Amino acid sequence: MTPGPNFRAQALLSFPFFGLGLVALLALVAWAVVNPGLLDAPARASGPLAFVHLAVLGWMVPFVFGAAYQLIPVIAEAPLWSRRGAWLHFALHLVAAPLLIHAMARGDFAVASLWGGLVALGVVVGIADLAITADRHSRWTPENVGLVLALFWLAIAVGMGALLALVLAGRLHGFNSARLLPLHLTCGLVGFFLGTLFAVSFKLVPMFLLGRPGGRLRQWLVLGLLNAGLFLLVPGLLGDHRPLLLLGAATLAGAIVCFLDESVALFRRRLRAPDWPMRTFFMGIAMLIPATATGLAALLGIEAHWLPARPGAAMFTLLVFGVLTPCILGMAGKIVPFLAWQWRYSAHIGRARVPLVTDLFLPALLRIQFIVAVPACLALVAGAWLDSGLLLRCAAGGLFVAALTLALNSANLVPHLLHPRLQPLNTPDRTTTPRAEETPRP
Image (cartoon, rainbow, N blue to C red; front, side):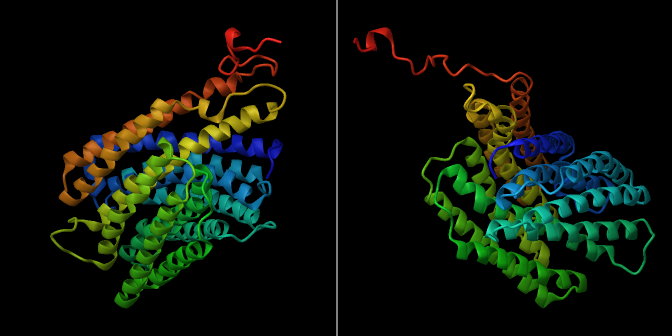
């Protein structure tokens, strides 16, 4: 899709979602610093449940949807089907998600189910908008199919969440919440977030590294294994069927191994060295290894002295804070300044001299983000394995600093958005104009 009014309007649409997610991330990691026990507590009590939903609905869902409202139209090479639908989605999420999280923190599941219904309505509107956009004369590439399948698993996760809320509120009987909760988390974290990460990586990693596209066969294999594993786990978790759980877990592990292999291949085919945001992104990809180990232990109920004492809580912590948060922060360092530049400066190309995209974010802050995120992720792994509140608190503190760097860089965009820095085309560029003694004489 070529730059134009629709493209610029879609860029503007993404900013409110990004802002909501960033505020939630700062609140989330600050909460973890104050109470690090939330990082290794089972999501059954009201406090841990609210913490989990702040991480998912407050931080990651808005940021992923903000990027999807821009990325899916680009992949489909078509405008977003309905910008009004996207704004309706944002309004519903902005109002209902904080009230849902607050109700969960108080243990009032009757009220939580009410606000959860509005959150679910907004998500359904967003899914429909993006699915229709993706279906409009799209090329069915792995990244396009992967994003559509991720939206499917999000719809399943939302449905499971609504069902679970009614069960916990005592309005629906005959369902076992202990079996619905793992399925709800698996469909959301693995189906939606990991599925989105895989599909986005196929498209954006070669773009940002100026590398050759990846191997399509391996990418299709990743998507096939991921979704086959999830389809096996659904009846396995609902029916506590051990053979299906084993087969589904093995299939998911195969998908992650193939994705790691594809990521290494994409990295080797690069034509430029990864900058600081891409280094942060690849660090999150590497964290898939310990996250997968804890996830398999949680799914299969494996207990061993060399595994975390609570593998389910460790899996959530490592996947959300070790994998997805660094990956989102890394991609945000590339996507957010580009969207700001596209919205503010694309219309002036050819009519005035405009700043570069790299001028909109401060490189020093991007460097600090990577430097603090590395020990934070290592502390997460050690804290989850050793059940150490001190290490988990240090990890949360490091992630807070990493999130703060994104907030400061985002604040640096405000002067550009309010007062674009334009220069006439005939203004000499001092960095390239030769000095007087170097100018050749006629």
